[in-house]
Image (tube, rainbow, N blue to C red; front, side, top):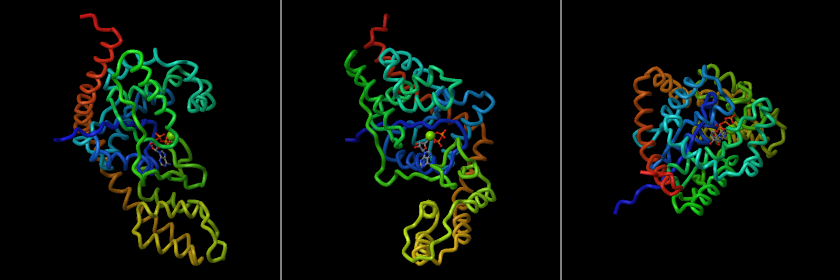
Length: 334
Ligand code: ATP
Ligand code: MG
């Protein structure tokens, strides 16, 4: 008997240029998951309005995020790929789910408190209810698994709470989604300046974007923080050097990685050479993704076609859930 693949949902906010952290921390897993699961991967455009409400940037950001995911190997024929705002059923279930969310619990969410600190001039209600919308993104497709980075654990916990509350009050409808990661997949890509992680919204020169041209990539790596070397064979590897080795492990051959690990161990390492080698290997890795993403963004007919196709599939599944939810709530009159 053929068994249905389990449903997985994941989203990515169109708030800037995708970078190596997004690639190795998220997109690479999407590409693996699309073989093993029934994946719903969406561009979280409504979510981006809580912090990035600029109509000049939004359409371009959405297209680029989609194009970069597809250029990286996300296959719209295998995964359902869509824009959140193309699925109005999400908004309707979000309204209904807000009745099951308590202001007190939402005010306590650490990411909400962070945002209050970061943008005190714009503490909108969307920020407060962000976890409700995120829960609905997941629950409306009746996902059983959600890939989560370490920072998103609490949101998933809340999604499970909302599912339970709904099921308890109205009847069993939503599976409680579980966190999921491939065993070896939780890489964290550090910022090249040694401050935190690569990120869409921080130091541009310390983050390598999938859209960076070759010379930019080489220039950024040349400026990456390294150690001066201690002259002591066997000295522990400082974080800045370990971070470069991590990048090498992702884009260089095992021989190259071993060469530089050994070179550190016996203190013959030349950081100029190391960065040059990493630059070449990184360019080989990013270059084809960047060029393919550019082509896709020029092919608006194709992009619109896959968005419509994804929205149709996502809506069909979402609509079935929404209709059942409304019936259970008592919102069906004829
Ligand atoms: P922002 O600065 O706007 O928060 P971001 O760069 O942190 O953007 P997100 O949209 O928050 O990116 O995250 C998208 C996905 O990429 C998440 O799954 C997150 O865990 C992953 N991710 C982001 N940055 C890194 C990183 N440096 N290393 C590994 N994974 C990352
Ligand atoms: Mg982030």
